[in-house]
Image (tube, rainbow, N blue to C red):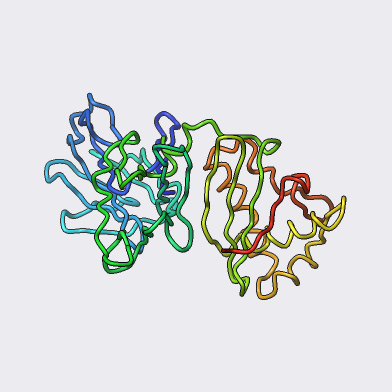
Amino acid sequence: MGSLYRRSDKSHHLLLPTTIIGRAEDATIRSDPGNTAVSRQQFLIRWEYEGWKIQLLSHRSSTWLNGRRLKHTDLILLQADDRLAMGDPEVDLVVHNVEPPELGAAHRGSGERRLSGAQGLQLPGLILRQTPEEGWQIERPESVEKLDLSSLQSPEECIRLGEWDIGIANFGLITKVHSPSLEQLHLVLLPLHNLESVRLILRSDNWEVDLGHRAEFYPLFILAQARLKGPNGWLETEVLTKQVRDYSWPTVEAYLSRIGSLLTKTGVSDGRSLIESAHKMRRIRLDPSQIHIQPES
């Protein structure tokens, strides 16, 4: 999820699909309201399919990107560690993360939670999917329509879609619900027939998050199989890499790290501890009774 780091107060700020920065009271990220060298709406950062882009909103005051003063016609793709300054060249904002926004859905009746994955956000009878040409769309068997995320102007807002509330997963939609620790968590893994990707569902009492299909869940699936085969369940990194087939160890290691980060985003307090390590050995920390592998229906 895209984010900015503010040097002046050492704070982190997550980016909405359309984020306005300035000193206005209703700005998504508000600068010092007393600094009149900054406009009420200085610039915006918005998500497009290829990444986060910055565009000026004010002609009156200046904005610098990596020491270069931006022009009003600029529409620039941001990179991690890019430096931003407003009003004067002194840097205050740094681009911390450029990952895409993740959508979350909460069912208003049951409280079930779901997160978008590689195949989009799957809900009964429809899929929310992002395309290069049209952005986020609502795909139904009989129709396709645009999903306008620009209406999400604050962390508390969501879009109602039938019985589901749709919002940015890193904000209140997912993280404000009471979510479990690893001791309370059950992993449900549903591999596709060709094993190119695996679907992961997290469950505990009165709590569920469907993380969809992702390539990085395949190494987790291999570790889960090993954990179910015996009380030990440890795999050497070389063995794990061979079983994952086409991936190198650095790729497998990065995938396992992302899984821990993803669990943390859903609110699992110790999610980064899911994968245990010891002397180039890896295993899932959960007991076998908490791991469930079943075919995709």
